[in-house]
Length: 409
Image (cartoon, rainbow, N blue to C red; front, side):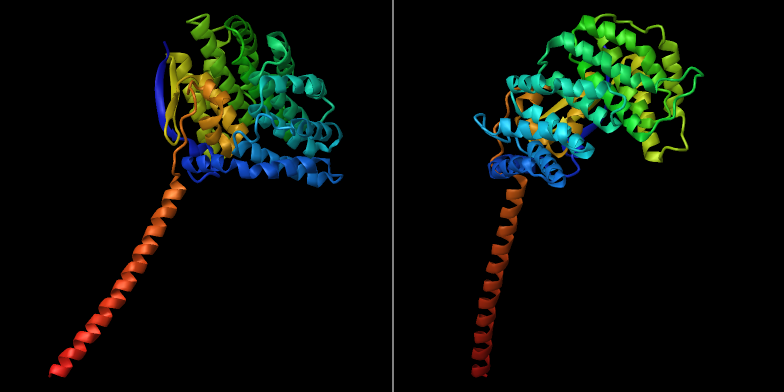
């Protein structure tokens, strides 16, 4: 068994810089009914002839779907209208609108059933796949299609495992462009291409976690040489993505099929990670360099001594531990997808709760921190008013006593 190394205790709000507290998200859940008319209004405006309005509504829909669970009732009859609006933006909108539509769709997958996702796959999978594989399309669009297709098939598997493996092959064909060139040097790439490689790596990794043990062994062994090459990329985001994928590949193979697995490229991998763990880059900020070195050192320790970094996540009334590379990978993927809404989904969304073995949702806290703070403030105001009245009465009594004393004199 691999050893665990507890890096830190993690309050889930740290993954959410926009939230005030864990308990505030519970308040947001209670108030989600009030956001539904806005949700419908946003959907209605997806048919606007003005692209800037459609893009704005897609962004606001993302916020509503992230911050509320469930964002709509089970018998909600606007699903088809929403899907039609997103499909229209994907096929007719400009690049920025298409990207926002893809982001909105990825979040939407977490709110609906497998059947609903099956319908989406039948309508849009050809769009995702054709754009992903078309090198003439903008990198931002291809990256968005990779991420959205990755989430769709990770969450619901609407087209089965054979299609997932085919999709992973297409994604790997894209990010292999980040490998070292024939002269042993990493390629120079534009930012859109760098982000495309990064997103394809993460989408591939997400789908890898859903494979059977046999398929994970086969795919993992075949991709290691490419990952070792990509780890030598000039671009930090690509190196870190490759590092994360190497972690889940080695973990699954060692835990499920070959306990002492190293592979043909193990020594090269160790050498590359060792240099990255202590090296510096003049093009990388100090904070980014520190994060990068920490990631590579963690992976190096795991490969050498089976020591796995662990993370404790604390919610309002429960906590859980991320004690494998797979769980860490999936948790961070959801954090990136749901951002400030991660707390509410962890507390209420069975999709996430099943992923982290949290069981059924706990009963919501009756009073949130915000309500208690308001009650405390009200008590303070009442006490101040009572004290003021008491002081006034005592002053009057003192005045009367003063008068009596003077009269006696």
